[in-house]
Image (cartoon, rainbow, N blue to C red):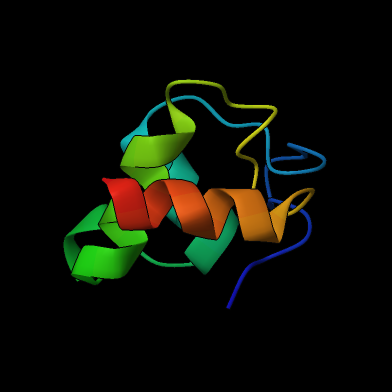
Length: 67
């Protein structure tokens, strides 16, 4: 489940680093993320705004499938 606001105040899922992204988007450690969740995080790095799953869930899913 995507978390709309990170506990650290990172509104709209803007976070730095893979651990922060896992916490922000899935509320769990990166070590607990599934392959699909890791692919989504990896796909975000190319364009964090455009592939932000909180803002553009369809685009982020498409990018994760490419990864």
